[in-house]
Image (tube, rainbow, N blue to C red):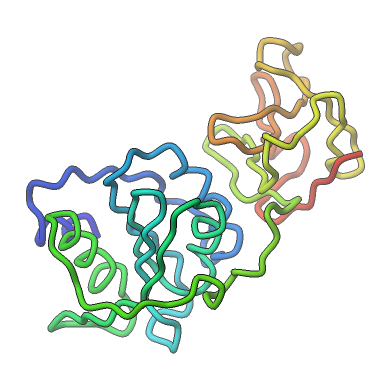
Length: 224
């Protein structure tokens, strides 16, 4: 995909935000994507692909959201970006490349569109109503683990902005208290905290929360 972007726009600077989003899980990846891209500067073009329906009937989308452009499948993956944006426009991508495989639209469609847009050119598109895309009716946040990182920390789909630091987070019926930093709790102790992406995250100081608490993507969490 990076090579396909550069083939259209060799001067582009490609940054890989994440390459291990939950496999085939566009719903939980939608909450992760919105959090990861929230701090990107205006003018960025984001190609996002978690697409088990590749080659099927789902549409390819362009989303203009608060000065940033997102390209991806209409399967709900871009819905949280759309929901959180103050200024947003949605369109179906009508442009098609000369070569379009049935199994790798990330390389053959989404990445080339990202490259074309990044060099300041446009592609054929048809406007859509933002309320009509897949995932438009999904909740603002979800009480589930949406990502487990290399260190075993478990990122949830719950917004940290609305989290009360006096509350306990229930994980496998075990109450987990808030801490501002890892060093605020003893080695081996579990805690929750607002992570750098603005989501509630579960961690263990100098340990792996995923192993200690038995967490994986999709695991439910809730406020006590």
